[in-house]
Length: 136
Figure (cartoon, rainbow, N blue to C red):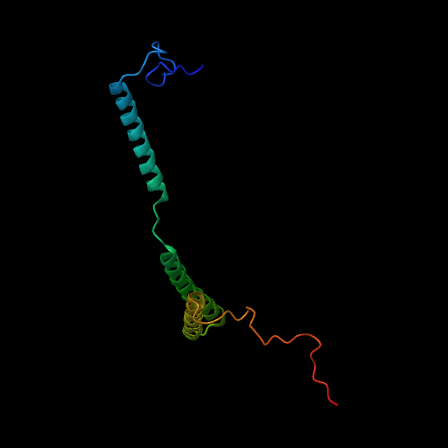
């Protein structure tokens, strides 16, 4: 459809009045409608891009508390089982309950990064291969 220089505004597609000029009021109405739609889109985009709360601290705390309680319960269960099998009434439970408590504290400290993992690689001095001291 070639542009016609005698038209005062853009033609609307699907309108029975195609080819007729658009009045200022209609143009202002279309402009307001477009601005409202753009504002809604902008609000939706801003709502999607809002920073979400950082729950990593809460997740770490929940993991540490779960590890701590689980270690104590496992220690108590092992001690109770040994007491039932061997017949050393409270001593196995007391010993393994304390052992579970120590394991729980160790797990919490390891998770918090206060102590290093014993199975992790320890940084050592970097000595290039073949750099032996020669005795003359």
